[in-house]
Image 1 (cartoon, rainbow, N blue to C red):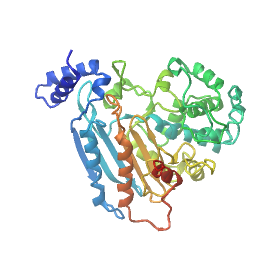
Image 2: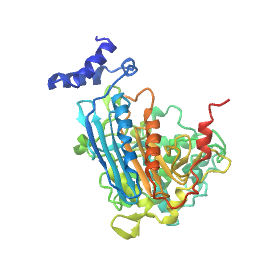
Image 3: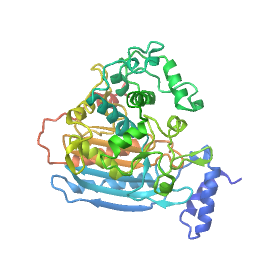
Image 4: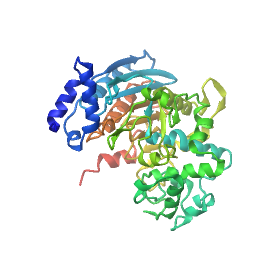
Length: 439
């Protein structure tokens, strides 16, 4: 057996080898033999694609946007993620498009393309589940402040009768972050039965605790009320109306080559199937994860939110109304909490990728696989950053967290066409993070 350090040297040298056959053999061998010891060693991904477009846009200091590429390329070179797609819109115009690195390095090296489709993981919560619930609110079919048990009586077990839908949407329900022995969950019925039996970690509304289970429950409520699974509902009522043609649960095998694979799990590459363990156990369809998408579609979604829910090219039609969008993207957590969330959306929590310059009216979300979306209604700006940071294994340190915030600072600093200079861009959550290490 080749020692791990020698193996890693041989592996990365092979990426640049002129002998294609040898390269492929080594990559396949890596897929079989990669171990935790190897993962812990320093790694350097190949440079791959470098395709950058910066618009000559009014109201934007475009020279600052040139600082985005070095940040991404340094992380790729240092093995933090194989590649990235960065797309930025401002006042309805694309001002930056960057395509970097490779969409995969196993089972063979394939350069990143702008139309690469990613497993967007927890972005599913805000791209599919949250807007679906808000549509039900608009239709008078669900009451945000009603207890969950009104719609799903079994949920009331073990003193969960006070948990409301608002608490689920803001991660203040008190539900634990996971179910005991959840790796053994085999189907939706089993999952729901075990959620119903859970006890709360905290009384509802008293603490912020991010939990996928909140959105598992929301997806079940959607199914109870509409008789549609989240995948069918989202496709018919969100993705299709918004012309998000490359957004779906369980992508077809025929387009697998366009998809960025995620992690090697049990010596098998997770490619075109959801990475999230719970969603995977449910066949790829869940309220917390499961959606695959690309930069163009996420940009369409973001721009529609900034346009008050208008559908592309059909200004008289909306997938959500402007007031619904304001409600779900403004603070909805109890005032005593430092971590601020909207309905589904992150505003100023520990996970925030706002940076320090965007106004506190901005909002966004991330996905564990390496995806993120940040939207600012004040400057009319959105940022999509898509990577497959778990490929072939997650790096020991998640550099992407810092990269997202740095890119957000660059973009927000570049914008000069603002109408008000009395904006608040410092939140309680930001200050709490900043001073958290001071005794």
